[in-house]
Length: 403
Image 1 (spheres, rainbow, N blue to C red):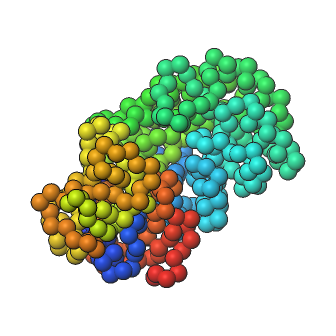
Image 2: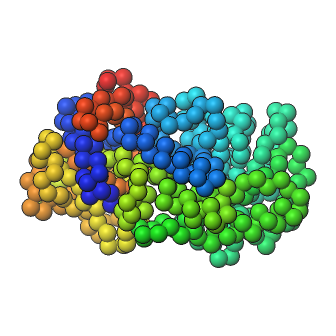
Image 3: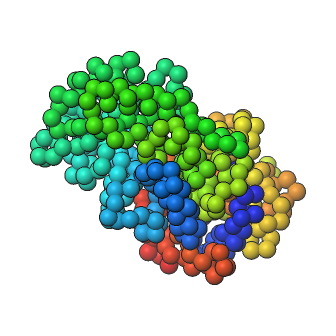
């Protein structure tokens, strides 16, 4: 999805990828993070957020690397959002404060104590039951936890398996019940997704944000101190105006950090694409190249259409990596449903492909959701003086055998 954009705006990142892989300094199945451009992207996002009076929780699940947080987060502020409790542990363990937990994956009951002790700014609840359990645990700890209500309306859109929340027509009843729990305090609302996942030349909020705004007004009329209308999804410099005008107070940039929102494909944004996936050709079968799997994720068709096929670059040095592209078939032969990405499959076409070649993708990453992908942090990409800062496994442990 982003390969042509990366070739145009950050070609040295591709060169760095083939150099580090062919030198044996990074293993296959590794996301390379361009720390210099990530840092610049975050500064662009901060500036635009200030312009529109929006507060930020950075979503780091796409890159999930403890070293990158050193370059982009203020350790004195609660400015991160965690997709789940594992994400919270990575961020907390890296010495950072926690802003928001729970809007995509609810905190399991037996992990509530651990999360509350991290003192997040807000925790999202989908139900009375979860609010009650948060309050009970907070009471045992002698604390009060601010919460957001995940609300949902009849016209909202939902991504599969991400549904849930308090129905708008039940809001007042649920809020009245939660009000009786002394150790939680309702201070806002959230929903997902609140921005269309699109490669159009303009940004457009979903009905979900309108639901949030209506629910926030209802809660204010009930006397709740509502200070947050949290609007996650496709946050970048290009979407902030629409968020602000739609009524949001808080946004959650994720792919904006790496310059890989769908808007980057259709619009010239200040954010530079700053992430690639690097792997290796392992063998051939029926003239198809089988590559090392473990980090493959093919969400790109959601923005690009069902017929979209990712292309990849293949080569063994910084010059021939740009000589033609291969088509990515998927994790198995065409027409076969594969549940584990042991391999990715490439149709070489006219491209000369060899065992051991480097393969470079530019797709929408989700590092936390991969089977076993590594991450590597690189400096000096812009001027071609590549410096490898560190390589980390899927659990965010630094690989000691590498620099």
